[in-house]
Each structure stands twice: as C-alpha cells, then as structure tokens.
Amino acid sequence: MGYRSEVAYAFYSTDEEHKGVINLWLKENLPFDAWDIAEYWHIDEGSGKYVFHALDVKWYADIPEVLLVKEAGRKFIDLFCNDGDNSRGACEHVRIGENTEDMVSEHHGNSDYILSISRSIHVY
Image (cartoon, rainbow, N blue to C red; front, side):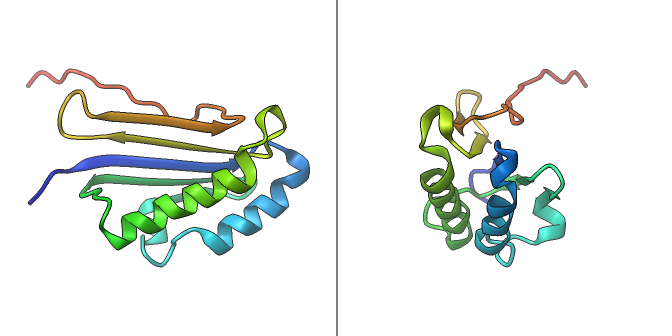
C-alpha cells in the first residue's frame, strides 16, 4: 500500500510576450506520456496554464514518473523563473502527505498563487 500524497504542480507564463514560447516548451517537456494527460493534466493554452494534479499517489523520489515531473519543474524554474521581478514564468508545487504536518508549498517566479493547501475537518 504505502504512504500516499496529493500533489499538484502549476506551470504558466506571467509575461504575455513570452507565453507562446513557454507554451511550446511546456508541450515539449512535460511528462504527458508518464502521467495520462486526461487524468492528471489540466491545460488551458489560452491562459498558458498547465496544471498537474494527482490524488492518492505514492510520491517517492525514486519512482521514475515522479522524477520526470520533478525534473521538468526544475528545468522550467531554471529557464523561466529565476530572474527575480523579470521572470517570464511561474512554477508552483504543493503536496499534502498523510500526516497532518506533512505539507509542502513552493512558489517560483512571479507566482499568482493559483495552488494552495487547505486542510479541513469532516464530521461523519
């Protein structure tokens, strides 16, 4: 069975002038073959947003499919998000683990904060 997480990544352009280049890079570099596009990816080319969202998955660093998403994120950040206020893109990553305190929230570039974590209480 193993430890399960909910994971999301968002990749998008924050600069209208470079949206076409960023969209092209995303189409060519995101791991659509490893993670079924219909099930895990939410794409809005008009706005330039590519969002990966996986529920109840094993998100271990040694799983090849996980490495592909993480590596695409690292490359995207290096290319489009590391220029301070002049960054052309944004990458966001959030992960919620099974344990209450196991949460990750990262935002790179000129992030619009389209991903966030919200824990809630459910009464049955």
